[in-house]
Length: 325
Ligand SMILES: Cc1cc2nc3c(=O)[nH]c(=O)nc-3n(C[C@H](O)[C@H](O)[C@H](O)COP(=O)(O)OP(=O)(O)OC[C@H]3O[C@@H](n4cnc5c(N)ncnc54)[C@H](O)[C@@H]3O)c2cc1C
Image (cartoon, rainbow, N blue to C red; front, side):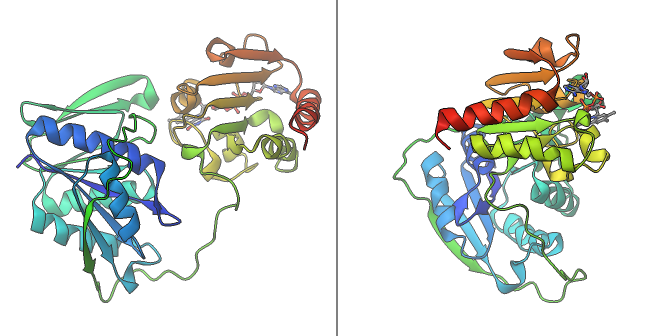
């Protein structure tokens, strides 16, 4: 008992940032629980990503590969991960609150008859079991979750924990498993790739985000132009997403993504609590809003009161000059 299993994710053969931070947390929890941290990566050519877990102090990892595992289907992942859990019997199973984690962990928790806490922002061991902290009521309150089950499942919000590299040259010992899941009920007809060239919001160092004030999909061009000059990823408020100005994968906040960039530029975003819940930990926040009373200014390090349609083209031009682009 006391072992912690993390379901890690990868992109381009490398571990995702949120899996790296979760690996560090898993090692901390396993030490407190008197067990070991283990990792698993599922997909195609995942051995290298599984080895990478060693950097964070995870000694053993499993790389599950198979033709049925790409493209992603929750049913297939659940099947192979359930088999692994039955084999290695961890006390705690962790995943990031990513699309994959949100889809697979509830399925696994049901199959294993374990409790599940989702979207956690803190995890610790108390009384030998996992204790999870998670936001409720759209981020207005936090609740501590205790588990009654012997096996405990949790998904963690990206950017909630510090990534601690124990030894950058260390590789985890990887057991390769060739899996075949057979007939599945879901068939993937098409996979549409997200916009190329931009980092995912959860991994971005700079984010330029637009709100309802943009008024249309076409007007978002001025956000994209500034983002391009800065090498930034485009974010959005829920109001902008709901109005159809931009797709949901750009949404920051309670029902969007939690981000932690070095620089967050909020343009025409009022600063509702549900938006702040997703970006308040950004290192430097710049707000551009024509209303000097907008709540976003109370969280901003720098604020510009003015019309974004006038200000953004000026900023883009000035940054172009400064950066020699
Ligand atoms: C359960 C729940 C979950 C939610 N989850 C999220 C979430 O994940 N993310 C999220 O963002 N919201 C979320 N919301 C919605 C949230 O409450 C707000 O409605 C939303 O964030 C408002 O978006 P906004 O700031 O773009 O729009 P508004 O609140 O309408 O603000 C627009 C701002 O633009 C300014 N402005 C207007 N014109 C200009 C101009 N020309 N130049 C400069 N400034 C201008 C205005 O002064 C105003 O401050 C959620 C709500 C609920 C109830």
